[in-house]
Image (cartoon, rainbow, N blue to C red; front, side, top):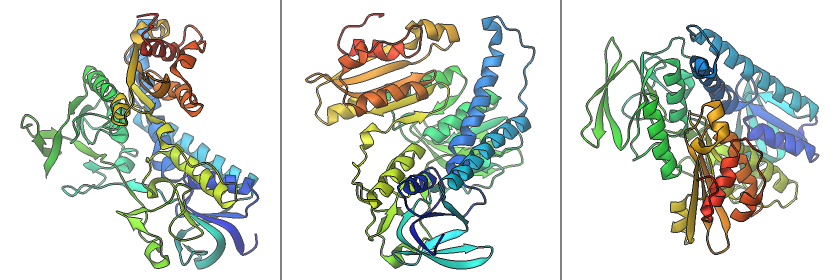
Amino acid sequence: MSDKRDLIVIGSGPGGYVAAIRAAQLGMRVAVVEKDSKLGGTCLHRGCIPTKALLHTAGLFDEVRRASEFGVEVVDPKLDLDRAHAYKSSVVDKNAKGIEYLFKKNKVEGMHGRGWLLGANDVAVESADGTATYNAEHVLIATGSVPREVPLVATDGERVLNSDHILQLARLPGSLVVLGAGAVGSEFASIFASFGSQVTIVEMLPRLLPLEDEEVSKELKRAFRKRGIKSLTSTKLAGVEHSEAGLQLALEGDGDPAPLDTEMLLVAVGRAPVTDGLGLDEVGVETEQGYIKVDDRMRTTMDGIYAIGDVVQTPWLAHVASAEGILAVEQMAGLEPRPLDYDQVPSVTYCDPEVGSVGLSDAEARRRGHDVEVGKFPFSALAKASIIGKTGGFVKVVRDKRYDELLGVHIIGAYATELIAEACVALRVESTTEELFRTIHAHPTLSEAMAEAAHAAVGQPIHM
């Protein structure tokens, strides 16, 4: 490649590497700067992928322990944590090599080192060989995020963990308190409960998964209680005392909760954008509370510089970063793409039971002035759910009565993270609820719950 690039991307996570590949497809000369030794960013190495690998192990362990219900006798199954980690690492490594292959295929240049801005068109890269400066017509910041700390206690990787630490645990804790009941906290609570730890979730807000539909949150709390996971909502961490045996947590909240003794504490209270050290102030890129300000086409306040993913104030989701990356480079290429509709972004949580949602909750729809009608259908009424032994949860459809507009779909139950894709397409094409229930769904499948909930939303339930 020549010294002049069309685009330099700082960060190779699901936002950065997807943007780089799309830019190369559009004929740009692209380089990607990555500070880690391997491509893929947090999502691949410390987030989405390794977490879901452990969730698969946890789910399989649960299935094996229930095997006799389905006529299969398995004697005394045990968890091998070392082999679970080896499986997880093999999945991560395979995907990292896949990104390397895609870079070679699309002629994307990879640079290993720490990158920062020197100007609207200049990027410095510090590597083992020293510091070099590179010029590009456009720069895309995709540096992602890191686990957020809490003031009361510092994570140490031994007793007090963040989501990076817990992915590498060499031994299973007898007890684990999870601080934060968002997607990250709920997923790790689910994993370690399946593995055999005594798990308690502490959440300062009134419910689990606070960004999800309220009925979904209630159902998850009920399902977790059934699995032996204790949930303390409207509860804050007030102090931590260390001892040889572990930790004692002082709590404040509803009912004056008693102190909690635990072997380990997982801090899962969100993530913080990685924007320090990028030279943003020096080159005139505006930020707010650590996040980079962008317009609806991901352009910052400095011409030629774009930002996507967790460094901007949009949902902290890998698929959002990817979509924003494609939008940004298509804007650079002059294609004038349509801005993203963040109401149509699916939210997925891979705990057991899984949660998937897209669009508006009924509460949000009413707040926006819609005349709302809701339909729900329980998985317990489905033959396929009974066949696989996963009858908990429901599908909930939210519609506007006036035009029968589909406003949102909320699912809690088996394979909810897969089933939600149908609702994403329906919202994208501005489907009515009638179009959803007149779509013929195969029998017996879990997807029938979608059609049944749509029937219920117009007051015409078939199987209830």
